[in-house]
Image (cartoon, rainbow, N blue to C red):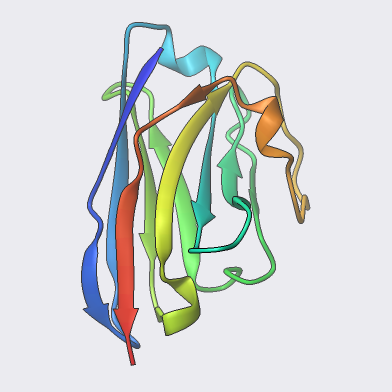
Length: 127
């Protein structure tokens, strides 16, 4: 499956952005979709996941209550709605796909369990 992330940009603190990940070349509904981010000098970190099948979601503690992940299996897209952005959210955001199922309440997921990755989209939050 090929993934294309879009929607990044420059926003002021307190603002919002909506990232979208478009998938092609596979049966989208058979993949769990995740979002990760990587800030300069830091490791790639888990942001959110929405499971195949159940649609169960998990969010990192740092974004809980501000970010929402959703998917549209008819459109082969997975979106990340990001509200109340702050400068600590500045990073390159990546969407990823995995054939694993995920449960709720996950605080962190190893990026290595995702086999497919998009190219990343830059999100910059100014103070």
